[in-house]
Amino acid sequence: MQADANYRVVVPAAGSGQRMASGVPKQYLEIGDKTVIEHTLDALLGCTRIQSIVVVVSADDDIWPGIAGRYSGRPLETVIGGEERCHSVLNALAHIAQTADANDWVLVHDAARPCLRPADVDALIDALDGDMTGGLLGVPVADTMKQVSADGRIEQTVSREGLWHALTPQMFRLGLLHAALEKVLSSGRLVTDEAAAMELAGYRPRMIQGHRDNIKITLPADLALAAFYLQARVRA
Ligand code: C5P
Image 1 (cartoon, protein in one colour):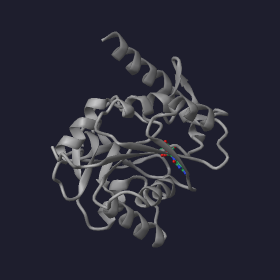
Image 2 (cartoon, rainbow, N blue to C red):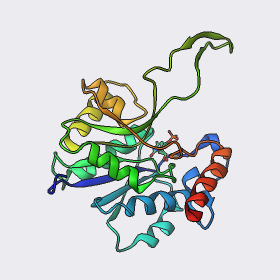
Image 3 (cartoon, helix red, strand yellow):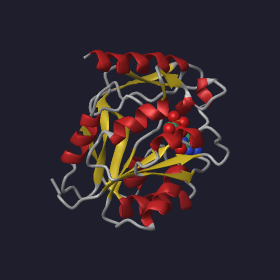
C-alpha cells in the first residue's frame, strides 16, 4: 500500500430523484432509522483510509443542513452542485483542488448507493495501488442483453461477453479527473460517470469487481431491496 497516498471522497447528492416520484429527493428517504445518505456516509466513514468527504447538494436543499449537524467533528464539507451529476462532481473537484495535491486519489460515490461495503472500498484502493489511471467498482452483466428500438421491438441480442455494470466508487487522480471532466464539459458533452470522462480523455480505467448489492436507489422498489440488504448485514 502507498503509505503517503491521500484518499478524498466526493458524494454527489444534488439530484432531485424524479424517477422516485416522491416529494423528497431519494437521498433523504428513510431506510430503517436513517436516511439513504446517512447510510452512505456511515459506510464511507467506516473506511479508515479516507481523509475527507465532500458532499455535493443543490442550492435549494433545506434538508441537508439538519443531517450535516450529525457529522460535526467529522472531516466532511459541503459544496453546491450543478445541473447534471457531472457538473456537481466538477464543482467538488474544483473545491478540493484548492488545497489538495493533483496526485491525490478522489473516490466519487453516489449518495444514492447506501449499501456500499467498506471492504469493497478497501479492495478498490488496494487494486489500484500504484495504478497511473484509476478505475471503478463494477459487476459483470448477468442477464441476456437486448438492443431495443424506440417502438419497443428487439433489434438484436447483444453479447454480454465483457459487459459490466459500472458502479461507484470511481477512483481517479484528482488532477487527471479534474482535467478530463473540464475538457468533456467544455466540449458540450455530458457524461454519466467519471470513467466516461477519463475514457474520452484517452485513458483506460480498470474495472474492479464489486458486489451486486451496491445498488443505486432509482425507483421506489429499490428502497425495499436496499433495506433488505442492509438488514441482512445487521443479522449476519
Ligand atoms: O440521477 P442519478 O441516479 O444518476 O444520480 C446519481 C447521483 O448523482 C445521486 O446521488 C444524485 O443525487 C447525484 N446528482 C448530483 N447532481 C445532479 C444530479 C444527480 O449530485 N445534478
